Image (cartoon, rainbow, N blue to C red):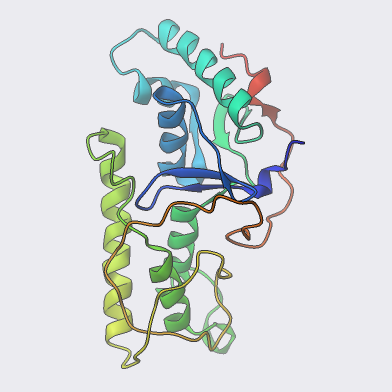
Length: 233
């Protein structure tokens, strides 16, 4: 049975892993894994075909890169259907696939007042900051520091983490910030826990199914073709 895309989560903070229904999916090593990592570091989890080819095969011709990309997409589709889709010449992680770095950044933006309602309608930013800090299991793709496309997003997320640490430390609260990645995003007002911890490498993903999704399901994605049907021009 093929599980829907909202049962898939991608972990790039610290250790890289892809989970389907709470069980780790073994993706083909090499370029297939790099493609998932590449998309997970792009804004919105998407990038144009040309950008993907340049990122994964910087020293080959466009025609050669696109041919290799088709092979990679077929291998990924076989290993994990619904993980990547294409629409209007763009490759993207399926809209319902959850990426821990995106959940962290969404919480950080809310806690820092960059998004969400203003005034009395806002949830407690310190409580949301604690949840976001709890998601930060380590620097972005810590085992891929040599990949040039990981540098800027890694630094951006690290800076957000340190900013949240400062926000929590100056709030005068105490306690434990460590939260399970299944916590809602953003957290309800009055969420228990405070304090700050250093980034840690995440434990290995659960070996059995049944893990909760990282956040509530998002609206259905618009029409898009599965990567198994992708034809890169």
